[in-house]
Image (tube, rainbow, N blue to C red; front, side, top):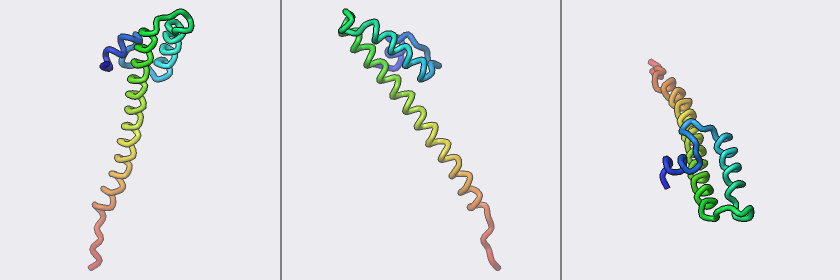
Amino acid sequence: MTESEARAVLGVGYSTSKEDLKKTFKRLAARHHPDRSGDDTKFKLINEAYNLLLSRHIGDSVALMIEREFMEWSDVFDGVRNKNYDTD
């Protein structure tokens, strides 16, 4: 399943927050749960779509955190690199 297909299954857009994604998933999962006379195939599809999009949200968060950390350390190293250590 692609990200676009997962978004179509859940009916969410690209700018959907993690909280809204979770709310949408819970609503659809409750509606299509097999224990509530829902469709088992649809329920599995909803779960798959949610897990894919959730992993993308988590992955994006981790990537952003790593990028910020890299930029902070990059600034530190640039400062050290530009400092003149000649002791003549």
